[in-house]
Structure formats: C-alpha cells, structure tokens
Length: 132
Image 1: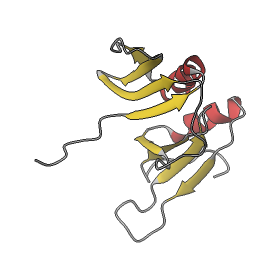
Image 2 (image 1 turned 90 degrees about the vertical axis):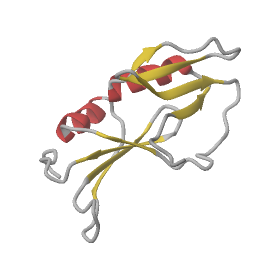
Image 3 (image 1 turned 180 degrees about the vertical axis):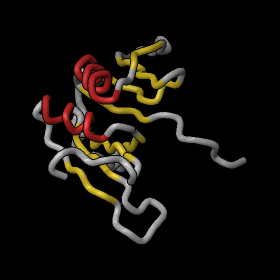
C-alpha cells in the first residue's frame, strides 16, 4: 500500500499560545478540534485538515533534530515578504537554480518562535517583492 499524502507536522514548544498566534498570523492557519490528550497543545487547520499539531512541554529539545524544515505552497509572494518585514522577522528569499523540475520556484525561509524553520514556495511566474 503506497503512501498517499503528507498528513501533518508536530512542533514541540514551551508556549503553545504564542506558536498558535504565529501560524495564524503568518500562514492563516485556524485552530480547530483536538482530541482530549492528557497534555496541552493545539491543532491548527488549513481548510478541513489539521496540518500542524502543537504540543506544549516544559522542556523542548534543542536544535531541529531530524526535521530540517516544513514547506508549504503559497501565492502572493510580496504580501508574505511584507508581513515578515512588518513583524521584524528575518527571512531568506531564494530561487531554485536551473536544472530541475522546480527551476525558478521562489523559496521563502523564516523561523517560528520555537526556532523551527518554515519554507513557503511560490510559483516561478510570481513577481518578486520590490528589490528582489
């Protein structure tokens, strides 16, 4: 039986509320139903799918462990860059080099409040932000 799709990512944090707020504001995720686990946390949705599970713990592992980053597909690159600038969040904007199926795709990287790296990809045909 083959794998059909990615289901969700989980972030461990000391502050579930701040993490939820970050993903609501930056990516438009919406908090939704979560099972009554014995530990605190929240589930964040895109449409009808819980794509990000946030687990609150008193101690958080350092570094990224085996997860380097989580990637999403977005539209309207200039609006995301403006949002990051307005919040004073550093970011790295790149284009995928020539030579593969994703040539020219925009890649926007930044970090959440827990130091988890987030990537949003945008079509190569999108107009870059002013100064890119």
